[in-house]
Length: 337
Image (cartoon, rainbow, N blue to C red; front, side, top):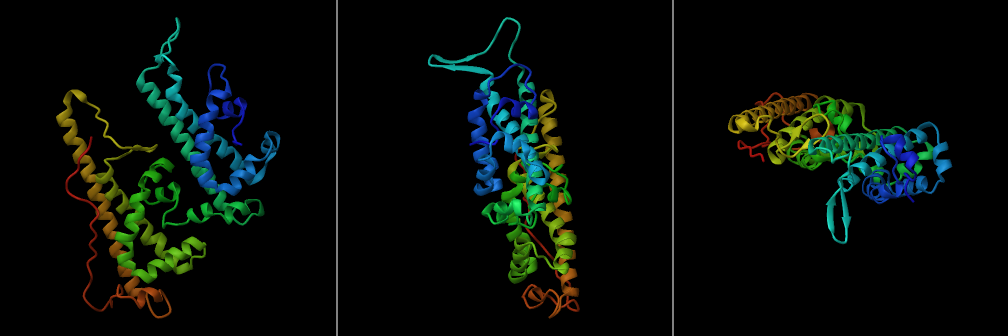
């Protein structure tokens, strides 16, 4: 059973200007809850909540009630985004037709695009808030199904695990949609850029402590002051030329939007120049953090502090020649559609 079941629940989250039958939205509700909500929550907690009656679900309070509200917000908005294209047409055995009436006409494409962007932003950001509630209450008995699930473990796989955390070090406006688009690059840059500086043993020690949520005070410091800011900037530097993306604060755009179609050549040059500067600045800032990370570890590590680093080949005696950290994060050629 789905969490979102009635048109009243749907209207609480999405403004519907005319009477609607919930049956129209139901297939897309089931789709987004299966593809987006269930993987985030884990099957056990999802099934536990979806098994509740509508009245019992509405009666939840405290953190579980807050979680319900965010999940319903996500379900309704993401389902609305999935259903919106179908709302514009009528599909029959004879073909697909545009819906028109005497006093109404189909919205302009730019208006539909704005709605899609708004629905997706609201839905994914609700998932981000739901994840924060789950993590904050991981030791609460009511959240035990989450705490012991693979989904709960997966939420701490990386050095940066949420959009809000990423935004602390590079501005993506807490957008979960943007974070999810960056995630493949983040996974890669952890191994390509961070592990060589830390050494494999210290890298794995940090990964295990992040996963187990038992970071030592020293490791919290090195993560917050050096690793996470370095990683965020290097991810942006790598992702921009790889994906041709723009960060607009709400989502990730895979194509560059041209403000001036009548002056396309000049517009393209300006866009390429601005994105090139973004890449260069993010890469340069990331390298500064990496250099400071290595310097800090080399001057601080000992047999009793950061021992995994101290005993690795990554460690260099600070009294010797200064090392130079070089990481390949971006090419020189940027191609955009």
